[in-house]
Image (cartoon, rainbow, N blue to C red):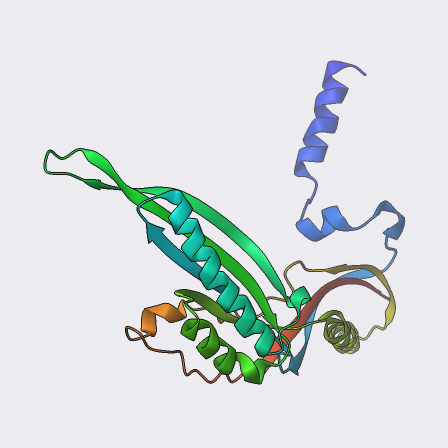
Length: 241
């Protein structure tokens, strides 16, 4: 290819339309009719059926062995409380365990070792949202001094997502028919479909419950799961004729 022809080809490519949807449509979907791009959503409302809580025990002592011993003793009480509350072993999991040195500045503004801090965090799954307040009360009573949650969610969201997807596709087709009638045309076919990422983003209800507890108090919290929206969004390219 001579230089002038090569430059002409490059210029033509640079001036060609290159919108996001155009770049996404496969080569096999070349259209002979009018192209219509539609984005539509479907949404269903469901009540969360699962609650996740992170509960932790922090202990400090002059030496590492004592800090870990105290932490272990309190965590044993916490696990016993979870068993009494009917929480299965499969629904509890250690999410983190840390041992760190604790320092403070002395009179000479130099750091000196004062002891050790142990942090042990449990990830807990509650399959009965109505039990959340009772379980958190029990955890605090047994020595938990860091609770984060509750986070409301779903055990299996795919069934609900499929319902939302079905509604989204129906909405996209209905909108395409509307445009086609307005143009005096009809929908020949759908040539490309994509689902947007992040369609399901359950509301994060996590809070640091310990910030609102009085010293030596308990949670005495009632969790109302309410309804959550589950949404699916699709982009569809239709061919009109």
